[in-house]
Length: 287
Image (cartoon, rainbow, N blue to C red; front, top):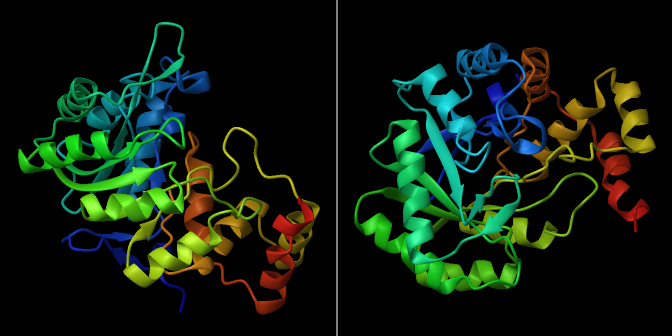
């Protein structure tokens, strides 16, 4: 029998257990993740449907909009259902034109955490990801700021995002890391070795852009496998990620209730060995 929503995962050293298929809220903001959505009621409906389907892991950030996504989350779901884990990220802000500007200062990170808490209506964030806007940027100083905020009770647990394997190892020497969030999908597999390393340590790996993000996945092989399985290509891509490793948690985003339900159904799709073999060749085909 298929596992509901991909089964469950417990973040290491925590009491937080979530279904492996979650939801990423980025697409609830306007175009280019800036400004309000075209249809606010539809955005509210997506969030409420996600929770009704059993999704209990929502990824957000106060710089989506900015502020828009968190305000919609609060309106749709507060007071939050018991067991709902809300994860945010800090490390940047948006200017009036919508540009993404890094801010890893102690004051900037502190304000970002406080802004997330205020707009979400929370006393402490379950998990805060430190998002490096530049992959070779300074990690230690900003991470120690989050450690101090954790000591103050504003953060329960810490993750990191857009980082190299060496930075992951360095971060783990500074603080317990419960999750790593990097770009990864069926066509972009640079983190294969890192996923396996984290799986051995029981640390969650959460791919951003699991379906390609702003440039949706395009692959003749993916389309062919999907036709053979009589499933949508995006569902096959989600199923492949869930079968990739037990520590992979997914947060595909959508502003459509129909796509949300399709993503949930994808978690019940088991790919046979021949399909996995064909899909594993996609990244090599791209060079």
